[in-house]
Image (cartoon, rainbow, N blue to C red; front, side):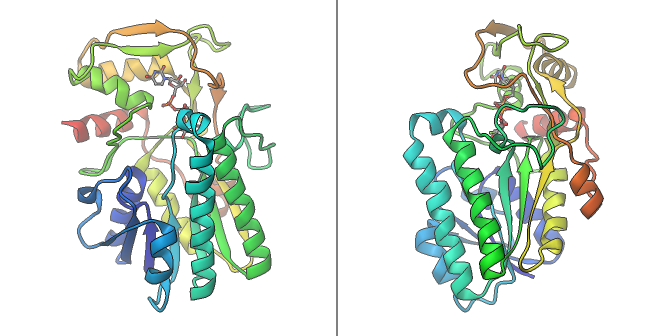
Length: 315
Ligand code: UFG
């Protein structure tokens, strides 16, 4: 297939692009390079630098594209609370420009990067796709609004859409991994200590109602996540919008993650217990039963593999 990958110079977009190329698809990446890296775009993909407002139409019009995989987004929860307008503009506004360009160009399939942040504080665990969506920050709200748009474009314009709601993505695939100018995620922060780039890692809260008092998250290897995108792509049906959670169904605590990082790196990794980070739910674990049943997707790499691959990437 001929595919447009938005945000293909970013962490997840680059890994998915590599898998798409390996599966013999033709890939054009559009990325505004605000957080992406040109050298992260896998060889064999064509890179167009620009926003979706400026580039989606010119790229898609007459280009013979079969589908779009849409990763381009702002994705920092804290930043979204400071600058909500930026998140509505870049996430929802740019996506509307993309959907309009798709409609005009007759491209009718899309796989979208949604997020666990659309659910907000969960009522029960594991989280099912049918659970209430009450995002607690503009990042999650903007992604939920896009999911709502996709539902109406599917019903009214015949779009075939799949949203994948990621839980905590980690790990790397060979040369493609996480390289954020502003790093907020746990595993890269812990590994930065092992690499000597920082003295210690802050552990945000040890008084949560969990067995060891630290927050529990559902970590998923970026390679397993990427594989789900290829299955989702093959499953897009005109006039339908499906939403799937992507997680392992298993939670690991922050303290457990630090323990795995110590085991993988052999570094003592000093930890400083700090106050809770605002807005962190105690437990976020996905039910992935729906995608397992519908598409036969199953994660195959555990937390140890995620940390080992992220560590190899950082070396
Ligand atoms: N944490 C630390 N120290 C750090 C970084 C994180 O203790 O230096 C803790 C956090 O408090 C949290 C856990 O590690 O308990 C995981 O934090 P991350 O920042 O790695 O990930 P989040 O669970 O906050 O965020 C993820 C995605 C977001 C998404 C969110 C859904 O990265 O994009 O899940 O709620 F919005």
